[in-house]
Length: 132
Length: 329
Image (cartoon, rainbow over all chains, first blue to last red):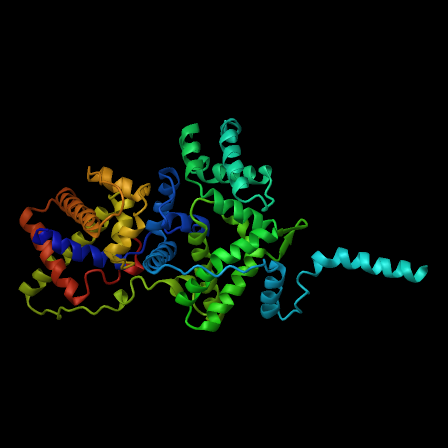
């Protein structure tokens, strides 16, 4: 680069860090678009509005920058494969535990709606048995 | 027209579905559900994103790029399929935990985020009798891991915001322009006539420089602007930008290659390539900057040199763009 280009680089950098875009968008890109953009998997058709948005939206641009850093960091250090469980754990059990921790519910409460029908049937059977 | 396009894509969608079903016969995803998800994405992001009529070829290109296996799993999980959830948990939980630990300040925060994300993925909100799973927002346009990274990132921001009510979203995620408004002026008050003339001249050059650089940047194409913003504002390193365009089909990569009239041999984009793109962009900014000063202010080459020289001196003092943050450019 010639000296003038070097100088303009510094001036430009300062300008970019001080500018306040006049057409800053009010909305943000959805997570699906942010993720796909970061991976470079959007087609030109889809990427064109996304790139325009990122130029003016510091919030979304910052997220994509963070995601790129994260992606690179993890690409350099492969994630070890998880030891496969012999038997599938019921996901409802996993989620019930998680929800109970967050909301302080009992382990079965969250999935009560799923088990409700079965419970109703059981109660009905018990009533019928008593009747008999 | 849209219906006809979607109809035309049906055989391709069926073929993708059959492949996914053969790979994961126990996920219980119906063809209707799979097709509806893809058609929704095509309508929103392919047809909806274009001001021009979309061709069947563009739809097929999109379908070829879809991460069909990941989409199939996410639909099965959204439907509450146990086997799919087990596969998801086996394949991605470790990765999610690592991402969360990397981003969160404490192990407790990381665990809380993972728990929250799992709950979101399953979905606790019921609308019209249907549970709304976060998985239903995944389109298959990127990998599921890339999508999960984004979901975790947002979840951590939410967690952080919950503890810092007073901060805005922007304050939380960026520090753009920080300090610019507090920059001190380096020049001393002048008392002589000569000094006053010099001050006025400097101010004239300074104002011309600020507007010329703003106009030069505004005249760039969006992909050039984004590259410069990533490098100078987000402080992405060359290798990080190279990672962003590593995918050979990346539109950013394609745009720069077309702009610089170069074609690489495929594969990895090297840092030196990104540096070349940046240098091209600087050269373009300089060209636009100069032509702007000539056109708008009728400056001579000597005056342009003076503008650059004064601006470079001002940069050291931090007063070139002071106050710009409060103005809209």
